[in-house]
Length: 104
Image (cartoon, rainbow, N blue to C red; front, side):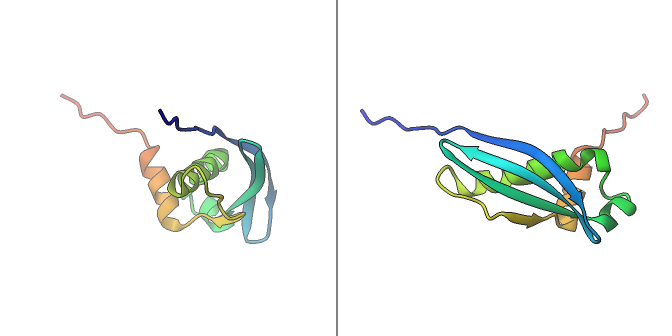
C-alpha cells in the first residue's frame, strides 16, 4: 500500500514596513524543512480610501499567501513579492462585512 506524505505548512507574520507608496507585510513560510520569506504589499491609497483597514492588513496578507500556496500545491514555492490587487481587496471586504438582517 502506498502512503501519501502530507507536509504541514506554517505561515508566520513577522512585521511590516511603511513605504512611500505601500505598506509591505513580511511573512515566513515553513514547509517541512524548507523556509522562505514572502512580502505582500498593500498600496497606501487602499487604506486612505477605506478599501482596506490597517487592523485587517495582516489577515488580508495571510489569506493571500494561503491562497497562493493552495494554488501551487504541496511541492511548489511561491515567489517572494506580491501586491494586493483592487479585486482582492474588494473580495476580502465583501467576505468580511457582516450581513444585515431583515426586519420581520
